[in-house]
Image 1 (cartoon, one colour):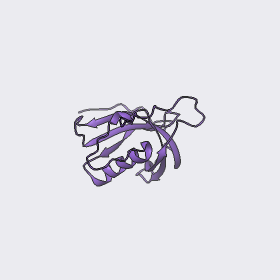
Image 2 (cartoon, rainbow, N blue to C red):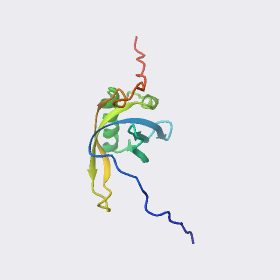
Image 3 (cartoon, rainbow, N blue to C red):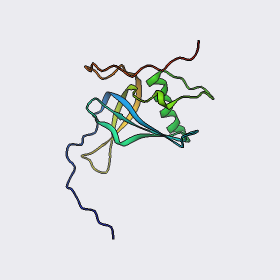
Image 4 (cartoon, rainbow, N blue to C red):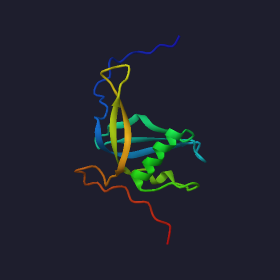
Length: 142
């Protein structure tokens, strides 16, 4: 028998509120590393809240998963992935994006799921933050 010792009800966790938020992308994982079929990443606000314990996951083998990833890259970085185009996931690391958050019901009415409804566009950084935004991807076309 495997037992787990409880620590009581977790305190302080709050999902992101509904509406527009600026999030920074980090900890990108591609599975497998070559020709990935799944991409996961953390997306956090300036207070470190967001999608960290449950990172955003994009299943690139499914139309909905690929579409969500495509619009993250297109609207968040301005890169239009045409048929056969390649994209370096490292270009997403540290990028700031503005997203629209919506809540969906869960089994616990006091704890809704916070989901990204849409990637609105790129962001320069967190509002009121003097930290520089992530550097723009270099254009290799001369």
